[in-house]
Amino acid sequence: MDHAAVLALFDHHLREKARPDGPGARVERVGAVVRQSAHEHGWNGVLWSALGTPGTDPDAVIAEQIAHFTRLGREFEWKLYGHDRPADLGRRLLAAGFVPEPDETLMIADTARTALDTEPPAGIRVAPVTDRAGVDLVADVHERAFGTDASRLRRQLLDRLVDDPGTVVAVVALAGDEPVSSARMELVPGTGFAGLWGGGTVPGWRRRGIYRALVAHRARVAVDRGYRYLQVDASGQSRPVLERLGFAALTTTTPYVYRPVR
Image (cartoon, rainbow, N blue to C red):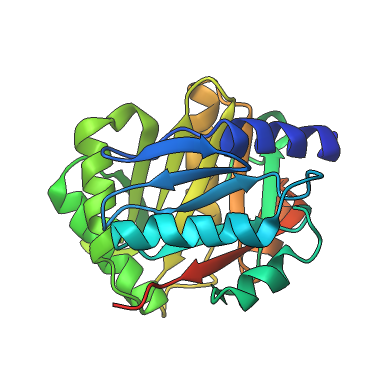
């Protein structure tokens, strides 16, 4: 895989030419940025920027985005990638009041070279999520796996399944009737890219190959639907697993979050 070429495709299709990621969301290019504005439980933020272009004032553009989302009453994320310019954009965001969350690694795999034969361990079955009951299972796993509130995830996933089911695949791994792991995949028609998100396993069930099996399961679905590339924002914990499955690290990504004073 030509890493530079694939990264350029990713930037073009999923950032510069991004599409709304759910009902009620709007993506627009305003000057030097591409941003998404959504309802309160949706994702609000800056997807792409050209702040390294000569004649552009990065600090003024940052201030414009703060003003826009503050008018909407939304906290928002500036999704900064390691190759974005200017090189000091992270410092400028910090100075403007953004708070960085943990770094992740953008990893991409060509589905033609991805290990797809991994099956769940004995006693685990993978079930598709298609309704509110399944979404509740995903949210339950998310809260137990990550220790964070899943109310926003619950609403986002249910909205997608109801309004645009062809662009999202969600699964839950069950040990008997107990949900022990879950994950989803977002498909972006016309781009060749499918994004893997939310893979998490509850304590007590980790290190048994469940996460790996859910990655392979979603990869098979992506292949069946004609997608060439799989994309993941990987934590340090999941990166080694993904590398063994055929994913390559292309750059870093850091969410910078701005929370308006209310």
